[in-house]
Amino acid sequence: MPRYALKVEYDGGPFSGWQRQTALPTVQGDIEAALARLEPREHTIAAAGRTDAGVHAVGQTAHADMDRDWSPFRLMEALNWHLKPAPIAITACATVPDDWHARFSATRRHYLFRLVVRRPPVTFEAGQVWQVGHPLDLAAMREGAAQLVGRHDFTTFRSSICQADSPVKSLDALEIEHVARADGFAEYRFHVRARSFLHNQVRSFVGTLERVGAGAWAPDRVRLALEARDRAACGPVCPPHGLYLARVDYPDDPFAAAE
Image (cartoon, rainbow, N blue to C red; front, side):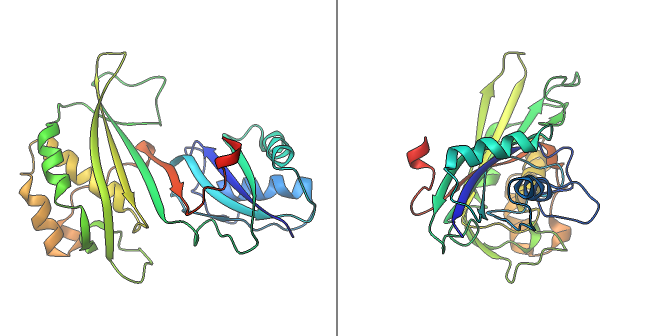
């Protein structure tokens, strides 16, 4: 059975997350249904990350096994046709070896979180960004973020329902960028990179750092919260709709030839 890597983009708003669930709309469920239109049977695909309800992706990666030898372009086009009108797009497709796995072959995952400082409601970006109505101190947020980079026990910053075997993870980067917007308001983009993440880890980071930027927390309180290894020490968990799975890295990029 030939195996194909799929690069997937989606608006997470209408879905109950990536992972297939009975009687609930999911990204995995819709892609598997589209695959079944091409080759009528039960399909099971695997993804690099199981995003939560409301979380978006511009660079999710999945793999699928097919019976036929499809050209990657034709498979991408056929899937996109059958995915209509769901807000899901296959943006690249490539053949990969039989032992290549979207999750286990990945070496790093990149997440983006978008936070907009604006009192009037956003219109065109509703459901795409987290909006707050008060100014934020970028330098303070960066100072707090720096204390999270490295290898730590992230118990404070993971969900109580997290199923990871260990709370110890290595965070490669947590960078905060100020972006000039055409509407004149401020946007902060949090770029977070690691080999793997705990459940709700990125949203816990951003919610905590927003409190630092707002002046409710001193930057050093982030270090104290980390060292507490206690979920109760975490700041508020921010909403999912500003979070994007931006990219997944592999030792050999399966899509390099297609780009």
